[in-house]
Image 1: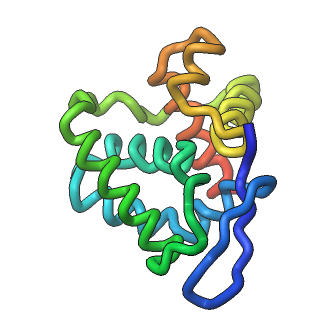
Image 2 (image 1 turned 90 degrees about the horizontal axis):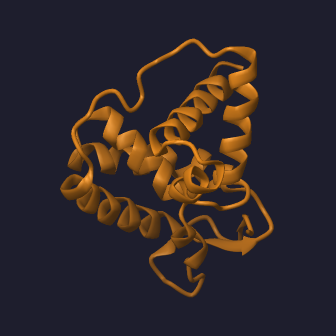
Length: 152
C-alpha cells in the first residue's frame, strides 16, 4: 500500500502525492474534520471512529490537485459524507474506546496497527481480518497509539 505526500504549492491549495505520511494530513486537517464529524455525530466515541476511518481510507489518496476547492474542503466533504453514513450504520455502543492502561506489549501492537492503517493505507476492517482480531480491538489500538503520541 502507498502513503501520501503533502506538498504546499500555494497557501490555499495542497497537492497530495504518493510516498509521504498520512499523519501530516491528520495533523493539519484532523481537528477540522473532527469538528465537522462531531456536528453530525455528537457521541465522541463514534466521532473518533469515523475520524480514524477517514484518514485511514483510500479516498484521501484520490484528491485531485486540479480541484479548485482545495484539499481542506475535500477533507470536509469526505468527513461529512462518512459521518452521515456512519450515523446510519454505527451501533451506539460507548465501549468502543473504553480507556485501558496500556501494557508495554500492547504499545507495540498499537504501534503496529497504527502503522498499518496510517502509513501503509490498510482500512481498519482489513487489518482486523488479516490479524484475525475484532474490529473494535483495531480501533482501540489506534486510539491508544494516538493517546500515546499526544502524551509523548
